[in-house]
Image: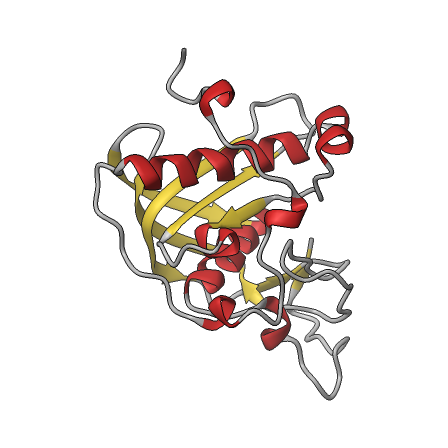
Length: 196
């Protein structure tokens, strides 16, 4: 079994019904750092997050297990106020997907240049679509413990990967993406902002 593999036979697998939804006050709380190496409970949570996102991006698995597709997930969305997240971004050019299973992540640098998803952001915890641009830093630099390599890493991310990492970081601070939408003019955007 490779470092990135998980044993799904010993894992209580989750479905979309298990995701904490908007309105639950836990989503507005600040997550706490976890001890590392991960204890048994935290390892199970990490593996559940990995399994959910990977499976949600597989059409057959997603349909069979009633999973809403996702780029990422944070532990708080499973009801645990722990600074852990997992993201997976498929590469449509034949390269391996970008995968990050992060423990106690923190952003140490971010660009002034901004970026937003052209179709707006979505979230596993928010069932309805909320239109509007969410402005994020185009590039960020993070430090975290990487679950896959068991060491502290520095990550530089740009574009979509940067957006997804920032979205999950917000979850760890009790922030939801729609908090960042201009309430008076949701579609207002400066020409300098890159849309992806």
